[in-house]
Image (cartoon, rainbow, N blue to C red; front, side):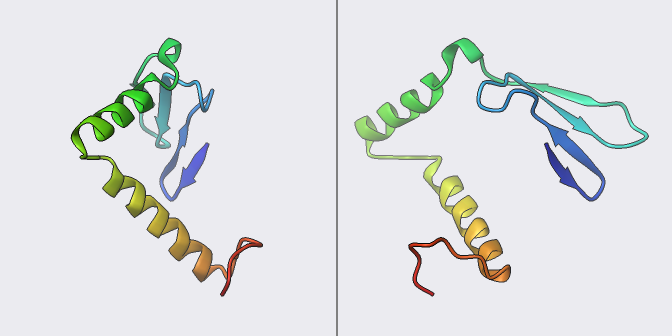
Length: 86
């Protein structure tokens, strides 16, 4: 579950989930359907094959943005991994 100011996101079976529920108090829940658990990591493998075949990786920028956000948060919290120099 990910909680935020006006509600939360619930992914019941993280890692194998095919649905997520967005909850805002006082409003109907929104259920999002995505993917097929039988395919597991097939989506990631397909993206990797495309990146290798074409030399392009359209999702790399998203990954870099997430990592930059996580690093900024850890820095603000003064949290460091044991192997990091700071």
